[in-house]
Image (spheres, helix red, strand yellow):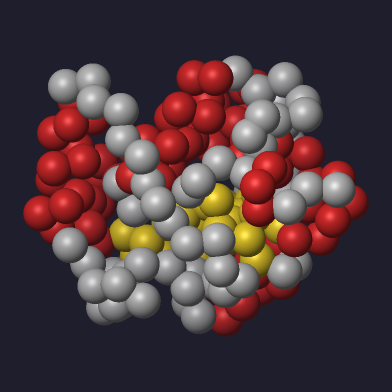
Length: 158
């Protein structure tokens, strides 16, 4: 795991505010770890299992609000499986607005982890090459949520 780097987060926030396009190079390893070395006061995992525009907008807005309120003191994972995995598709096979994928990319650059379900990927015939750069593949999306909850993450579902 990488240590928290508050200067990097501040830089990303500043670049995002000035319209800079950020790219996150997150590992596509099979794990449920996030980038935090020290435990944040708050941890949450969002279930993302729909490809609906309004649904995805609500999830990403909520994630952004937690970052704005808690900054480096919140660790966030968005667990994408079923139709929700299309948010991480490059390109998605379902209609996902480019703005939503860009918003997810900006949140990833700020430290939010986006986990892609390996089972869903197998069903779709996808490999890591079919995903955006910031996606982290986990073997089983629902297991990922369970393991994160066992580590103390709160669970959020729409």
